[in-house]
Image (cartoon, rainbow, N blue to C red; front, side, top):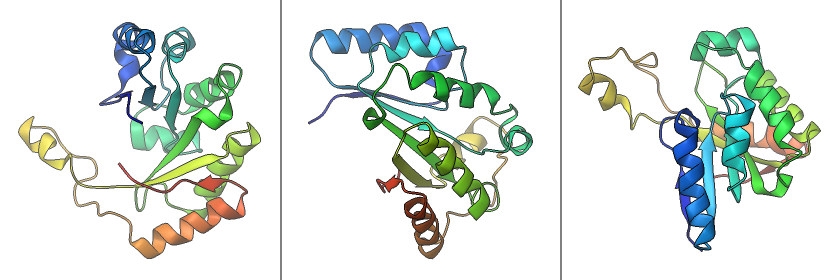
Length: 178
């Protein structure tokens, strides 16, 4: 039915603005959503969640060391925040997203452990988001090195295999992509 979704880079980097924007939307009876990786101090995340109807929460990798290799930070804060937010939000209003990047986090073990972790907390809605190359021109534009240069989206057959793993773990694959 429409609404506002706050996403972009990482909206929690500007959590006060995001919270105020979402609060204003709520006061106008507009449905609110946020897309986040959850890497923020808990007070920042909880301030934003107070005004969120739907949360899309990315988990990039379950292994902390591998997560650090891929993103530059460990996943410990992210996973702790996911545990804490269970007390604030109905699991039906949370979508756990796994951005699927071939060769980085697309192993059966990682997908299974991610889904097991999420469903163990009561979150059953999982979205596998296939990697795409839409943002690659930004790296060139800003003179930055693209860590996934040459990366390719996962094949549809591979996405089907991963969706089956999600289903085998008892979660609901809501499908779709960004």
